[in-house]
Image (cartoon, rainbow, N blue to C red; front, side):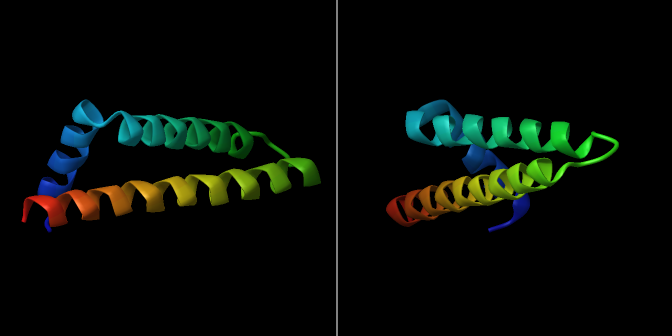
Length: 77
């Protein structure tokens, strides 16, 4: 599936699927928190651990969103 169609599907699911929307919002929140950590001039060991944890959580959400998109495509095909 090309990128444009994938973005359309993502937009559709954002509007029509509450679970997908909640995952996307949490994904954005993790991205914001990661950006805040990365914007610091010096990271403490705690910052690095938190950044690593957030990146794993964000990736997990991305995987869940991708799985929902795949399931939706299979249903309408």
